[in-house]
Length: 388
Image 1 (cartoon, helix red, strand yellow):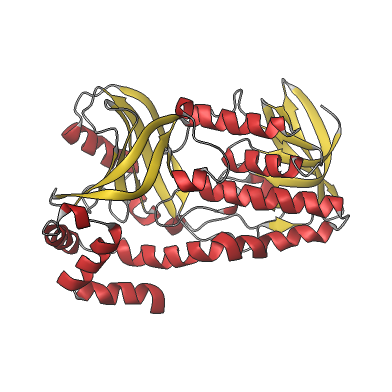
Image 2: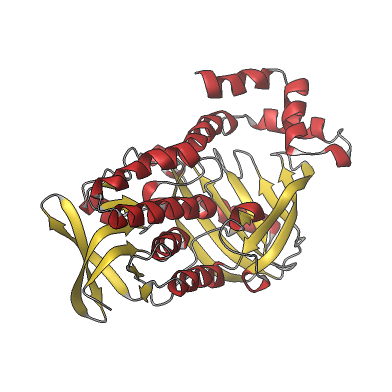
């Protein structure tokens, strides 16, 4: 490892690895620092993605795909099940292997990678970030950089140290819990979703298969709900009812920011990507693909600023992100407020109506149309999302 790089990326998740890759392929020197012993550990994710988004960056490989998805199974609060054909291919990943492959990809373009590197401070030249301090194998070290890219997750201490406002209102932070369980009966080609105030109020519960006998089972509840009852208690109740005695292979819990992107995601010498920038779909809480897209934009712009010797060029990152992805997330955030406030009665009625639709016509588009035809009052809920 050198003592100076053009770019230092903090965090080797998908967003960080993409930032490193797309910067390195421009020919600048890049160092990727990961605090954990191994890239890809621990897994803090439901692991589901759409294949089309993934293929923007890497060709699908069976070694990091646990299941290929082509159906949704939606359960209303009264347990009415509606099955939809997936309009495109989806994957449930093995993130431990997938993240490792992305970091290898970044390394193949010339990125230096260092694990067990715990970043604990920034270097400054006036008000400009010019490097990081970190601990590695018990020793304090530092490395200088023209640009630091923070991909250090929702906590993003790096962003805070740089003076960026990374705080998220607790009402926009989903409280999530998930387990990976085995010896259960699930269809390997189907993702299951459960809705209702008794299952996951102001959110949803998921069962994402990893083969035909193992699945990630988790849920998210709003911060307001989480203040009074934990996500874990809802999850345990669901498991006891639906998968009693199933062996638990892993368990995780934490916060997922279901909000729009931070107001500022760049400052002198620093850029934020992935969860650190809140580059997460506000409805689903999914952030793998959108974080990778943010990393791609940030890595390219950071390299361009260095190669052109125009440090202020990094500030164009905020605008480009907003134009390409951010404004879609803002629309999704408005939709979220409407959808998650649907009553259990409305959800049940919608499920009952949609069961009358022939299987070959059960698409997400037709689900929305059925909602409006059979429950005209939903039109007002959707109108509120966009016009209030």
